[in-house]
Image (cartoon, rainbow, N blue to C red; front, side, top):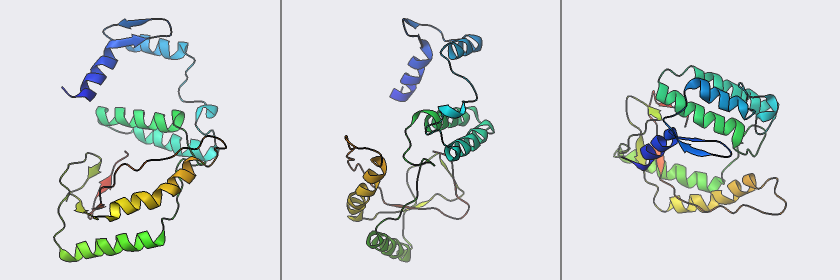
Length: 196
């Protein structure tokens, strides 16, 4: 049993409130709703509960919540709720719309583009080996290893991400540490990328 499965099983067995910690078989829906409302929660969320409470962000997140309600697979729907509620109500956002569009350094874009075109010209790019549930496609994406450009991309993009994260910080600035860069994924005709 994987650690994620174990954590989910454990989570489903534990019922917590502010003063007690008890193991139980789980709450039935009536009990769960009672605890939810007892803690002052409401559904749908109040306007001021969105983070940030801006018109643009609320509009985007209400649209996303409506999309999640239409998901037919219960597991996908659950994952959609978890991700969307986190984005809409608990995760700090750094612009009115959550994410902002910016431009990467042109020299880096040029080198990545040149590397990609060189790889495509060989017509020998491998199919991405790892299956990803968030990609729906008749043909799996291709993968292009960008060699040492991965490290360069991490280094050159970090100041852009740090400026975004710290846009409203006066005292404590967040310093990011590059983790990894995989290369370039080449989506093929008819590919759909699901909400991640």
